[in-house]
Image (cartoon, rainbow, N blue to C red):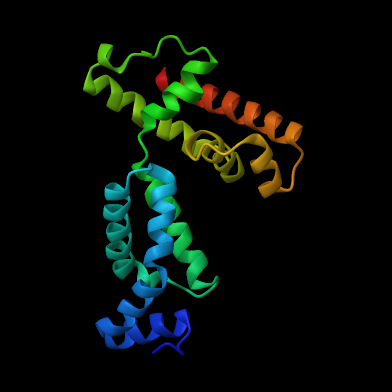
Length: 183
């Protein structure tokens, strides 16, 4: 089975539903998925749980794999999105929102009820979804993955000043969208 490509393994699994094909995919990618999850949440136990969740989710999504991209790219996208969904939005609130002058949001979660936090989390998520994918990516790289401006510039083939300006514009848009949702 080692000679099968990822795409062939997916096709064989979908045709036969033999666990051996899916297990081979798991063997190939579970370590990479785990490391990506760990880079997001910095907790080995939660990263392991997320890894298992992703592969469980993958079983149900395999039929939607259209081979327009490589399997590894598709799996990376699923992993990234799943991890992003599990990152606590209050981190965004403190690092992006409050640091930029949103005093009406409590900087002390103990002063805010769970219901208020949930509403704020939903509003931030809604605002974030309104941003262009490139803007979301920049914000996620900077504030979620804690990647330096220099590293982002290298990854995105941009200058550091361009990254700073794009981050500022993205934060401004996020703040504006949040304020519209909050009204």
